[in-house]
Image (cartoon, rainbow, N blue to C red; front, side):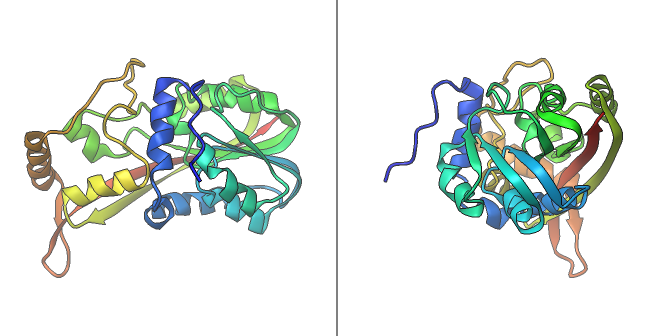
Length: 270
């Protein structure tokens, strides 16, 4: 059976992102850091009993599975960008309402006791606006739990290619949360340095987890800067990566790291 087409109502950038993730068939096998982030977010949920849960950007269901196993809710709403994920998400929580669409432009229901998003908000065109959206959709006293990343995320890639998403600073998130009427704001960061045998393995890992180093990358100005790999650029990338970021393990073998720098946030609607 042919996979559902990505809606043409998505912006060109969101269509590109959806294609990258829809073809990342081995995502769960390679997205080990993302899975750890999901566990951290789960640990930040204040109550195991919920009235209504809305998950934003569910992807392959890493966070959804943890929610299904640990949280009880009268109502479930699961948003995802990729139509191909409907069947797997519905199988995890059969009673859930699956909402396929761009969370930034989709009309989301209100009155939720918990809104949660794992490893998704960084792909928004306007990440900070997610806070306002969440405030509108939460009931009074409802909790918002999500993660994004800091400017040190994928620092090696940024330094070598000048490509990367723009991540709002922590103080920008704090201001946005306060302005939207949130209280009891808590945040934490966690850095993961993931070792790889060589720079090509880093690029393969990024592709397998839905990340591209070209046109899905949004510059701080908001414009997209095309980046196309050539043989010469790949060679320069490999040489520079080894030169600037190589390490040696206890067995005397050289390797390189890729840095994930995660920002996790919890807040309650006043």
